[in-house]
Image (cartoon, rainbow, N blue to C red; front, side, top):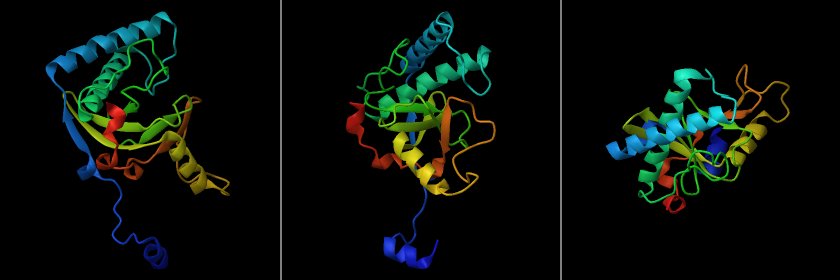
Length: 194
């Protein structure tokens, strides 16, 4: 970055969000089991309603594993906030935020960024989570509409986008947001998880 800009913005030594900023949360065996039950119910309800599995690998055992891991990640976010927030139930697809007043996006691979979907609630904060049950890592957070705005501004005036879009993105995907750009969890307002 230009030294004059760094001086003007007073950001000398600025460090992007990194692994040391992640918050580790370990869920209890009761939370693990409840998440498994809810994940299985959600998967069955989705099949009964003939909802499309829009995930990368789509369907089968991997879909169930992903649904359960995502639900366990929601319990980890609830625990991070104090353990009292409401976690969505099956058949509440996009009617309520996932946990309290926050949405949760789980990724198996800690190298992945945050994929923002077109149906995501744009003004509801979203927390990116990774890890293996029972240990989860809250990687950071962002407001999806703000992330879209940043991606748009970075690419403004370019014929081909340089940031935020992957090859072969699916129709329901809006953009991807780097995990290093997420706001660190120490800056998150836990009141949204009460």
